[in-house]
Image (tube, rainbow over all chains, first blue to last red; front, side):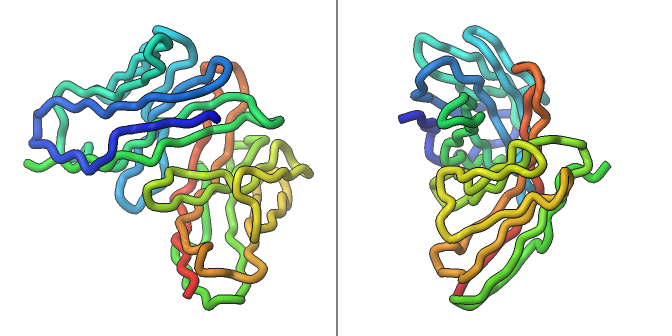
Length: 114
Length: 115
């Protein structure tokens, strides 16, 4: 079935380190792909998205490229800050079972230390 | 413009008690959703409402009921709470449109514990 797999956390980095959080998906059809971020005590916020193959989503220094050949959408940032500490969710959206379905990965917790 | 709001933020229930989680959005969105978030499992869809007056089951609807009171409000009811319903509950609303702009917006969540 349709699913999203992302790397287990927690990921612990020092400030200004490079970040990669891996995400791969399984889906029938051509899903749109998303990264959501959840800061402590808050709801999910859309971080970036890509709607077709080879699209690159970017926001707040984060980037992810929709790779159809490897069914991946890895999240990257060149230099993380303490304020980036949060849980990151990869998700796909497709029309299935009569509605527009958003399927989430389990989430990856990122902790950035000064 | 408050976005998506949820009440309460926290709730503790005893097994068998009932309660209603409230959700409201002020963005004039047609579609609204209820999810639950459990450790290691991401978010799973409980119920959704594609438009005012319609509701449909999602992935994990058992033990829940919903009401789309009007375009703004979408409530989730637990008639007889069970410990398996201990979770964090998120409401979301969706801006429908072209693929590039179609996005779900989430509320801050309700943390529910059933003893």
